[in-house]
Length: 259
Image (tube, rainbow, N blue to C red; front, side):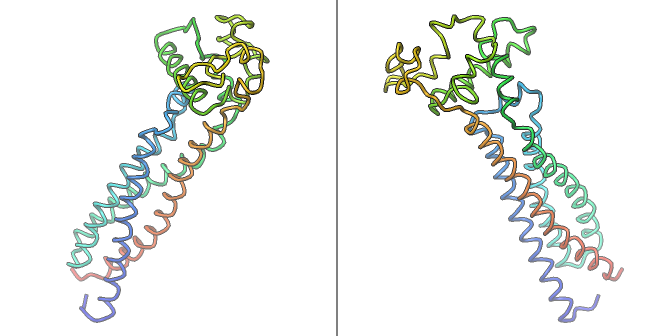
C-alpha cells in the first residue's frame, strides 16, 4: 500500500478508533470489577435463586475489557507497521472477544425482568431463619439469605420486601420458629437506638409507627442490581457499536495491504 496522505489519514482514524477501544475496555473492566465486588452485599439473595447470571455477565465483562485493551494495542501496532499477519491476528481474536461481549451485554440486559418483588418475597419467606434445610447447600444459602436480610433491614431502616405485613400475611419459616406475640416481625424491623438495640421493643411489637420501620426493602435490593445490570449491558453495547466500525475499517485496511 502506497504511503500517500490518504493512507496516513486512514491509519490515523484506525489508531484513534483503537485508542478509544482501549480506554473503553479498561473502563468496562473497572465497572465490572466494582459490580462483582458486591458493594451492596446482595449476592447471597441471587445465589439462593440459582440465577446469578448478572454476576456471570460481569465476569465476562472483566475478561472482554482486558482483551479489548490488549488487542487494541496489537491493532495499533499492526496499522502503524502495515503488518498483514499482525492485523489478521488482531481481527480474528477481536471477533472472538466481540462475541463474548455480545453474550455479556445481552445477559445483563435481560436480567431486569428477573428482579421482581415476588421472587425476593418467596425466597425470604422460605429461607429466612429456615430451621430445616434439606441439605448442606440449602443450609448455606439459608444462612446467607438470613444474614443479608438482617443487614438490609437494620441498616436501611426497612422491613420485609413490601413492608412488615409480609411477616403477617404469609406463612414463613420465620413464623414456624417464632411466636406471633413476641416476634410479629424480626427485631431488625424495629427502630434502633445508637447501640443498635430496639428503641422501644414493646412499641415495635405492637406496631406503633414511631417504633418500627414500615417501608419495604425491595427498592434497596432491586435498585442496585438493576443499575449495575443496565450499566454492564448498555456500556457494553456502546463499546460493541464503536468496535464494529473500527473492525470494518481494519478489515478494509488489511485487504489493501500489499503482500
